[in-house]
Each structure stands twice: as C-alpha cells, then as structure tokens.
Length: 146
Image (tube, rainbow, N blue to C red; front, side):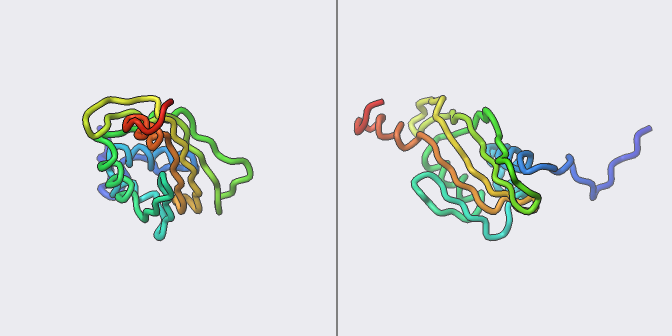
C-alpha cells in the first residue's frame, strides 16, 4: 500500500533550471492563473509589454490580454538560455507564435512572439514581451498591409 503524500509536499517538483522556471511561468500565465505564476516572480519584477507598457505583476499582463484578445495562448517553439548564465543571473528567451481570437471572435494563429526573461536565484526579475499583434491590428483596421 502506498503511503499518502504529506499535505505540505508540493504537488509537483519545482522547476530546477531557469528555462524550466520560464516554461512553467508561461504555462500558468496562459491558463490564465496569474496568482500561481507569481510564485516564479521576484518582488518588484519589471515587466515591459508590447508598446513599452510597464506592468508590475503577471496579473497585469493577463488583464491587458483580456482587453486585446477574446482569448490568446502561446505555442512555444523553443526556449533558449543565453550562454554564460549563472545561478545568480541567467537570460532566457521564449520564442514561438500566438494563437487565439480577437475580441470580435475572429480566430488567428501564427502571430510571432519573443519574450526575454532575466532569472535570478530561480525567480523572474525582468520580462520583456514583443509580438506582431499591433501590426496585425493595423492591417485589420485598414491602416497597413502585409
């Protein structure tokens, strides 16, 4: 017979590497579960979202996305760790595409994104986000062509 797990035991192992921290953070943010994602961020995290919008918590990014999209998810193509990182500080990039629906329900996919993270002592202290959404919205508004 198996011994039951201690109620204090974590439900799953904690991420061990900076890349795993970023991947788990993104998984939680995309649910969206910004409260759980906050476990992987340091107090005073610096977030710069598309358009150089300053944010201060994962919940800010979820609130912004809720206004821009009916829903949105990331298809992570790869997670890259910059050479020379240490446990004190490592830079991690997440690259892939966004898919989802605009507020009017029109589906989209293939919207490129690049996120840059600074991970210190296992916590994200900085997050920078870039994607093609602004360009795509300009096209939808008839203000640009692809």
